Image 1 (cartoon, rainbow, N blue to C red):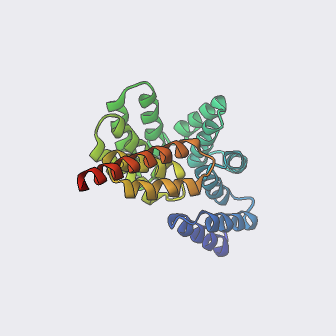
Image 2: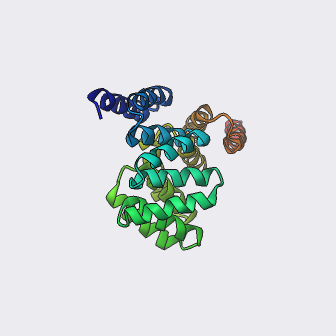
Image 3: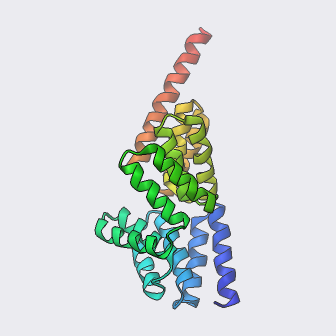
Amino acid sequence: MTAQTERLLESGRLAESEGNARQALVRYEEAVKLAANQALPLLRLGTLCHRTRDYARARQLLDEASRIDPDHPDVAFRLGLTCDALGDLEQAKAAYTRTLLLAPSSWQTWYLIGRDHRQLGHAEVARLAYRRALEAAPEESEILGELGTLLWEMGLEEDAHVYLEQAVKACPVDPGFALQLGLAEMQRGDLIAAHRLLTGAKHLDPTDGRIDVALQGLALRRKESRSRQRRRAA
């Protein structure tokens, strides 16, 4: 990989970490043009497309990355996530299986173990698996988000809030993380923080109906809060 490609990837990563998805997209696309026969630029661009909900393009990019480097576990893992999001469960399962075979002790494998147990209702086992994943990749947003939502479902709101905050910080371009944290803030009663997060999520993905529902719920909560304040003042 050339020095120019590496600079573009680093510039894209920095833009992504700052929440500038558009700039990150431009940088990663330039890197792909310069190194179309290498998997890493395709992986970065495909991952960003997945996080910003452009699943069809993400799959195309990750399929190509997998063709170039079929032994790259993160390519297989990201391809699995994208196929899952598109509802192609057969291809998702194949990609996940390849991930497990390529990297049986990786964070991706522990994440998948945790997710499988979560779907089976084994919350505590899933929690332990996610923690093992975090030991290997403490700043990986997918793990942080999954663990945060799991803990919230388990009634461990304070612990959950910590991980949800970390997920948003680690990946500010993903509307799903902003939505989950916004809902958590609303339930905690911090309506100002909830409004900031939910409007941010709406900006990131204007088509997500779950965000609209959350914003409607927030508007109702704020109206009720103002009514209570007026009654106390009277």
